[in-house]
Amino acid sequence: FSVAVVAAFAVGIGSGVLFVRRQNRSATPMLDIKLFSYGPFSSSILANFLSIVGLIGFLFFVSQHLQLVLGLSPLAAGLVTLPGALLSMVAGLGVVKLAKRFAPRTLMVVGLLLVSAGFGMILLFRHDLTVVAVVVSFMVLEIGVGASQTISNDTIVASVPPAKAGAASAVSETAYELGAVVGTATLGTIFTAFYRANVEVPHGLSPTETGDAAESIGGAVAVAHTLPAGVAERLLDSARSAFDSGIAPTATIAGLLTLI
Image (cartoon, rainbow, N blue to C red; front, side):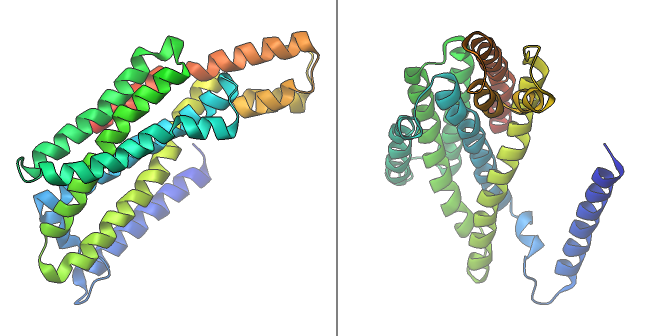
């Protein structure tokens, strides 16, 4: 904490309070705060938000794990996530037919449970997180994301008066954007904190090299390219181990958030 951090919190919270007060008093609010009084609307927005937090958090560490720990190229790492992305689209289309037989909240809960299950599988495979383990875990998670988001989007628009449908849709889109930011900021910070706490940088490096290697696994890989083979290997082994030390707490937090 510092003066700047505290000031930023104060400005952010104060601005939020003023914004809500202004919207509540306005005859034509930019954001109708009363929409959040509808239970189905609020819960569906939260489902959208948390599923994106989980998805972005998953991609944050998996993309780095595939490239910097397992040594895949960017193209190969992208292809690893392709089956999950395709299944997400299939789940989004398939859940529409299931909505004729099951209540929306049931399908939404099942979808979020699958998101949590995807993180549970990552937790289970964390000591041997191979490409196959990543593919299977991501497929389960993406099925959940595709199903829950499709149902929640429909519920968001259907749960408010027709005149508010446009505003409700805009709030839903904002929940996606906010979820992406929060997922990167919070889960990414947790991951980075575990890396910094566990990495061991070899002695004899310059202050700049030490700082870069201790900052992130990407920095460690870049520094390793400039070092003798033996020192580089020690640094990479430590960096990869430190990076993977963040898998368990990050997957646990993301999975629990979605369950909640």
